Amino acid sequence: MTQSTRHQPRGPQSLTTSRGAALYTGALLGPGLLLLPGLAAAQAGPASILAWLALLGLSGLFAAVFSALGRRFPSAGGVMGYVAAGLGTRAGLVAGWSFLAAVAGGAPLVCLIGASYVTELTGGGQLARAAAAAMLLLIVLALAAGGLRASASAQLVLVSLLIGVIAVAVAGSGASARAANWIPFAPHGWLSIGHAAATLMLSFAGWEAVAPLTTRFANPTGQLPRVIAIALAATTVLYLSLAITTISVLGPAAASTVPLADLLRRAIGPAGPTAAAIAAVVLTLGTTNAYVTGAATMARQLVRSPATGHDQGPAPRFLAAIATAGLLLITLYGLRLVSTASLVAVPTALFLCIYLGSMAAAARVLHGPARWAAVLAYCGWALAIPAIVTLAVTWRGSPQPGNPRPRLPATMPAQPWVGDGQPRVRRVCLRTLVFLDRPHVPVRVFEEAVA
Image 1 (tube, one colour):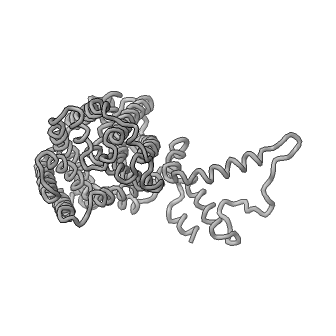
Image 2 (image 1 turned 180 degrees about the vertical axis):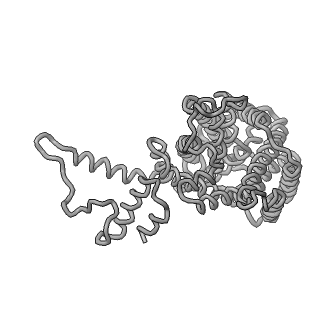
Image 3 (image 1 turned 30 degrees about the vertical axis):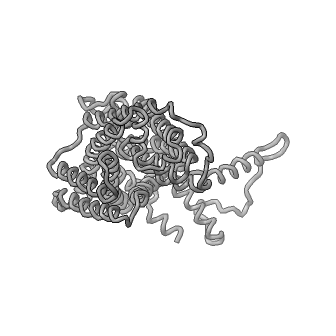
């Protein structure tokens, strides 16, 4: 049973609202912000702003769900524990290993982002960029193997650096904005907005990483809503301001791997690429170190022996796996066999699966508004169709003066588990609704019922 807030310790580890908001904001921001506005603009043009808006709304739903999961399961061990609580141990293991694979695929991508800004300053082609990325990856892994962990204070410094760089780029280059850069609005068609949204999904991964921090608030019920509101407002302003400025100032040139360097060049002159390169390298080292060390901790939990309680697979094995996978992907990029957009798709697909599993689990174990937020985040815009049907039936079925309320047919089964006489699709749908409404029903019972 979840421990109430009054019994939780209130020691020096308690987070204030301002510091908690800073940590949440830091989890959502990272080096991806240095690359993804350009990739989204290349895929959808100015219409990519619609993808940003849609994902910001989705980010708000994710925030509500993961904060509720963090309060309900304060010691669950992140997404692995959340998914296991709702969908079973095996599903939790899938989520845990998917997270590790996402980190292994995302680490070389982050290093390539930092290397792109370095080669923008020093010169060199794609092979030189790959060499710089490989060097950054090896430095990060060496720091992680040596036991260096990015502290919360160091992460806050990195986030402050990123916010300062973005503020200078947006404010300084605003005078070069042109309304003509927004025409045509969707040069690659409206379907390209979906491709841009899939790419931008990587920018909104982070709520799952900070959900366990809910146990460190002295009053989670009162503090958490304010913390989430501040973090969501801060990320919304930063993302939208950078996306709008990238399109308004750069226009067709926004389809670049170093959009922030281009904005800083217009803001502060020739020193812009240098400032962008320094910020990119610092952010790459700090953020990748934080993710790698966190993932290494989860790796130890996944390979721990229940009998002895000791780790059977040390962290160096996980670091070696990241080095092998990362150097392979970077080499393929250097040889022009894969593109940056293809590399973004690898961790994005894995994080998407993790989020879908978390939302499905949350729909089972949560109640009230948090459950509806999970359902809406899981179904997306497709939920509008059953919502319209529900509203229409409710409106037509509302009793009028002098008319009785319509009743179900007498042949409708009284039990929620519909018999074999009903069509299979209908039986599966009704059983799914009962499954979501009864968290105590094991997954095995549900699987046997729909077989």
